[in-house]
Length: 75
Image (cartoon, rainbow, N blue to C red; front, top):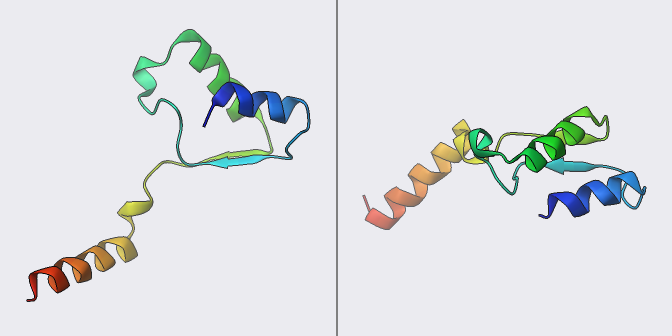
């Protein structure tokens, strides 16, 4: 994803909204000033949804991973 392009598309109404679970830089403590401004813009938009990149941490995901491991180990 290219954040600046996404913001431009939102501002120009090229796209109606965005839902993201991955960012260019997921280390918030190392954001540049430009990245902080981009994040501020995105979080202020009612048509932008940001979720943490944690899809693999659900109960269902852990269960499925366990099944795959057991099958590979042939236990």
